[in-house]
Amino acid sequence: MKINGTPTRTIWLAADGWAVEIIDQTRLPHELVTTRLESLADAAHAIKAMLVRGAPLIGATAAYGMALAARANSSDLALTVAYNILHATRPTAINLKWALNEMIQALGTVAEADRVATAYARAAEIADEDVAINSAIGDNGATLIQAAWEQAQARGADSVNVLTHCNAGWLATVDWGTAIAPIYKAHDAGIPVHVWVDETRPRNQGASLTARELNWHGVPHTVIADNTGGHLMQHGLVDLCIVGTDRTTRQGDVCNKIGTYLKALAAKDNNVPFYVALPSPTIDWSVADGVAEIPIEERDPTEQTHMTGKTEDGHIVTVQVTPDGSPAGNWGFDVTPARLVSGLITERGVCAASPDGLLAMFPERAV
Ligand code: MRU
Image (cartoon, rainbow, N blue to C red; front, side, top):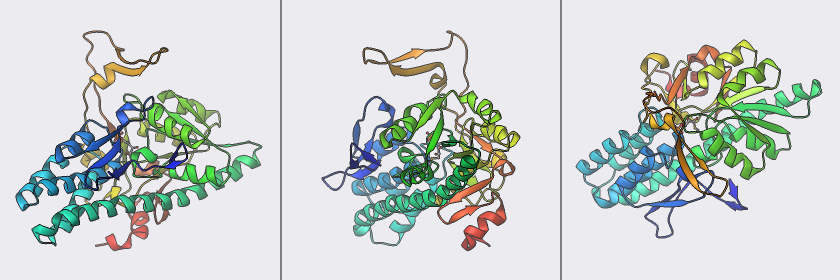
């Protein structure tokens, strides 16, 4: 992603070569602020307080968190403590555990004296791998947008409309995004793509983050209230849906930001294709039934009862939107069963959301 013409990742090594820098996403869309992570505690806070968020970026941040931890103390005990602290930050996105396991595996093969260098090298690889994977997802998903555009053209439409939920773009990954990568590739290839952006209450990742980055990249888009998608689909205004995922099971069930399931139901009822874009580290091969087995994060109810925004005179303020005394519930994710998913867009190609579909893409996972 370029901001003001400068290629920018969402996480990078500071000029001093050891601290890690991130974009503080709690300050978007109104302010672009970067923050230094200098310790395990900083990395854990950044994930837990959602300065960084999105499954792949959570994984990359955890990997660098292990490098920062190793820099302070690279004993077996200290690294186990670091693993546990980082693992406890957020429960649903499986990329977190995947990245931590990758780090422990790499660190387990080297002498203690070499662990700091190894940790930084593996964290950098994880970040680079994420960029390459997401670029490939973009290429594979862009062919679906191209096909939808050809059908839309045949009907006399002047653009192809994609609906997305939450933020599964550049800001949710190290670069490119997952669900938004195909949109960037299609847009850059000259396909007139327009994006319906679900606001994604309660934290508004769609309104604050997806809209922000589509805006930076110049992709036409419209922010809509979360409950609008079904209406748009009934009126032929959505050609396809593409969303991301925080954890996909081996049978193709998809856990993603709360509200994704309702969009998939509406898409099914209206014969709108519903695709999920995912890098392979988001597949949890140990889980089959997503509804029964994936832990769903429950977050602070104040995210529901309060909203933050910019006043006309430029001040950032938080206001309460519910009456005093009304309790609120705040489940962060839901599971869309595989039967509602038209296909999974992976770095290796597009497959059915089924055990056979996933194993055809990743045959090395067959037992
Ligand atoms: O709670 P968040 O903002 O971390 O949730 C993010 C999402 O649900 C994304 O859609 C998901 O991580 C896929 S991102 C590539």
